[in-house]
Length: 212
Image: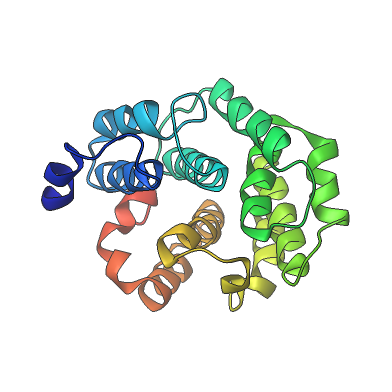
């Protein structure tokens, strides 16, 4: 992180991956307990009103950071979620791009944008449509704090969520959602086993999402 932090100081904001690299720095700071710096990165280079770059990076990086921040115990203003949901409605109004769709579903669920969320569940399209629909249902259940339903919707896709695209770091969004649901149900041992099995390099940071 030290290397990238120093290198980032000279990164031109017009660089096509400026948003995404900023997201990585924000995540690392969040994981290491430096939440204030993490939010500074988000507010300066990731959120829709500040980021420059591909719309896909803006929506995915914004939504995934907000979700992780909440799971790590950060208070996230509802206006931030509304900003991402509105951005998704503008740039990804129709289902069909799986990686964008799952992050749009998360944002729509968080603000109660039921019509848009419902379309992603019932009208998901493309080769990963079944995974998109399940993830959208899981996020809907997460907002409703129906932890059993979160696990039920996620279980069928945990072995195949690579189909929606993205890196392992990006798909940690899905892994951590399952972990959070297990923890909420008091199943810390199951959560710890899942983390050490599926994301062993992150196991040491389990305390960040409640694995004490």
